[in-house]
Each structure stands twice: as C-alpha cells, then as structure tokens.
Length: 283
Ligand SMILES: Nc1ncnc2c1ncn2[C@@H]1O[C@H](COP(=O)(O)OP(=O)(O)O)[C@@H](O)[C@H]1O
Ligand SMILES: [Mg+2]
Image (cartoon, rainbow, N blue to C red; front, side, top):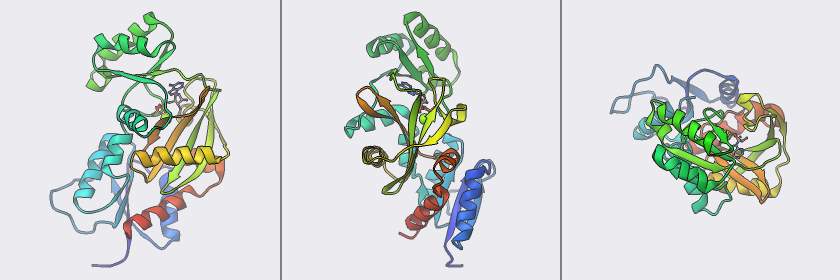
C-alpha cells in the first residue's frame, strides 16, 4: 500500500473541465484514479486502490447520487457529498432550504398532481415558470402567460413517462434584465462570477447564452456563500437573478460546469477545486 495521496475523478466524458482538473492534479504532484461512470461497478465491501477523496464530475445526476453514496460507504469523502447532491440536485428541496435560511428566492408553489397544478400556477400568478424538479441546462422549462398556456404545458408534462414530470414546480417569472448571474463557491469563498446574457429568457451558457465576468461585489459574494452553505457547502455554482426587489437565488448546482466561468474570469477554477479537494481528503 502506498501512502501517496490520490484524487479520484468520477466522470462521464473528459470535457475541458476534467482535462483542467487532471492537469491541476498533475501540477501538484497528485496521482489521479479515474472512474468512468458507465463502466464502474460497486460491491458492498470497499475495493482496493480507493482514492483519498473523490471529485464527482458525472453529467448524470442519478449516477452522481448513487456513486457518492457508494464512495461514502467505502469511507471516501466526495465532492459533492451525497446529501448535498440530493438536496441541491432537487429544485424543490433547494427552494425549501433557501427559504428556511432566509435567502431571497423567487416565489414558488409546488403541486403534486396535474389537477392541482393549475392552482399552483394561479397562486404564483402570470407569467409563471414551470421547471422540472430535477434537471439542468434549462431543459423542459416553460414560461406561461395565461391559463390556456398553463393547461397545455400541464397536459404535456403529465403525458411524459417519468413521474418527476407530474410534480409541478411553479415559480413567479422574475422580470430580470437580459441576463442572470452565476457565482462559483469553493469552500469558504466565492471565487468567480459571470453574467450570462441571452435574448431568450433562459440564459444558460449551455443554451448559447453569452458570458462576461461580473464583479464579485460583497453583496453577491455573501449571498452566494450563504446559499452554498445552506445546502451543505463545498464546490457549488449559485445561480442568481437581479429582480426588482434585489438579488434572488434560484438554483445551486452541485456538479457545476466551469468552462465558461474560467474563460470569462481567467480564474484558475480547476486549481481552486483541486486544492479544496486535497484539503477535504487530508482532513
Ligand atoms: N423564475 C424565473 N424567472 C425568470 N427567469 C428564470 C426563472 N427561473 C429560471 N430562469 C431562467 O432560466 C434559466 C435556467 O433556470 P434554472 O432554474 O437555473 O434551471 P437549470 O437547472 O435548467 O439551469 C436561468 O438561468 C434563468 O435565466
Ligand atoms: Mg441553472
């Protein structure tokens, strides 16, 4: 057995982010154990050769959750930990958590059946936004301007196979400027921020929104750090909007992409994440 420290990388595909993480580990003289999320199997006893800490970079939320449970079972700390993945990966639980911590967030109403969904929409008022409770990249979200549109979206969602689409997460439409904010928190610090701008109301960089560095004002840093800490902390990307009543947090992402943020800010985010992982693994 070597006592050399090793970083685990659990991944789906090696994107630029994973390449940068591998390079940052190498630059620090840290060995990496790779786990392809489509190949790996997990028994009930810890296998040999486990890393000291695992960076969860799977693009699949489901795979990330189960893998983090398995590694945690083997005694390997994971970034993000299972509880954080489960909480932050679920927009309903995240909204509840943000509200519990007094963090400003868009007004939200949940319904658990298609029959109750219209009432949730009407309680929020128009325009309203319907989002899948679990999902990313702005996929399968809808903005509805009246009851007719709402009923059509509710009907379509109800016809989808996965039961998650018959849970209705309804949010007030925040009349933001043509942009939102993305802040990456690593441990105790907000390390970078960017605006994501789009002519579409969904400003996700993955949907083609353009990005630009944003000033990390004390207010933005503090609010992002509070949101990240509320869901359990670690490496988390906090999404915020500039609403008429000030900044509101609408999402906290537990396995964030950071290519666009690295490009926009020039911050060595991969290096910061690896340093944080080493600190967690050495605890
Ligand atoms: N309530 C809202 N009002 C206005 N725009 C919103 C609202 N919620 C989300 N958006 C826009 O849609 C994008 C995606 O929403 P988000 O909740 O972050 O889901 P995802 O997990 O798909 O990124 C946000 O970045 C923002 O631009
Ligand atoms: Mg988002």
